[in-house]
Length: 185
Image (cartoon, rainbow, N blue to C red; front, side):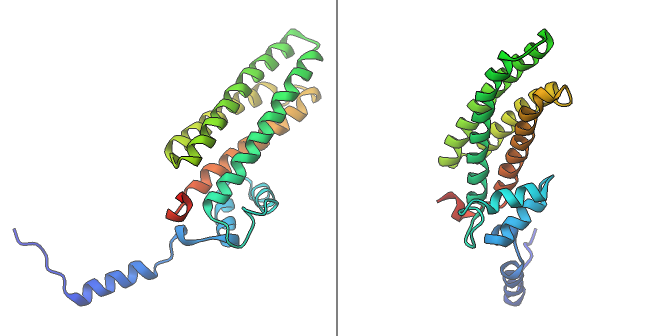
């Protein structure tokens, strides 16, 4: 069977089309930030969070900068939740509230562990594993959120932190879709 033969003009046109077709991987700075935030469930949260970080909101920001900023903020918020839960446990007035908070403590510990692993994988360029770990952290955080959301004002701060954490996980995962070779070095 004969292989199709391409004429030099066809190859030049093909190369020209490939070279001039815009790619999401070629975005950086503000355009990248807007494109990534458009892919999240809360554009305003994403945009305000990332523009507050000088590396992620800068004109030369790469997708790795966005993911790194979201991951660092998620670690900080998860640590905040970790310090809040024992205080809430001390003030729990019912056994049901106590059980909910114990479940949240376990979920939060799992999320923190997964975030630490994700950070290590991010720094070693194991992106697929990093995304899996972030998704595992998100499921653990969501488990707690489902337990405490709309269960009383004494849970409201923890619920807000968990809701923000889930958004940060999402930003991190979405940002990896825009990674280019430059993000890996």
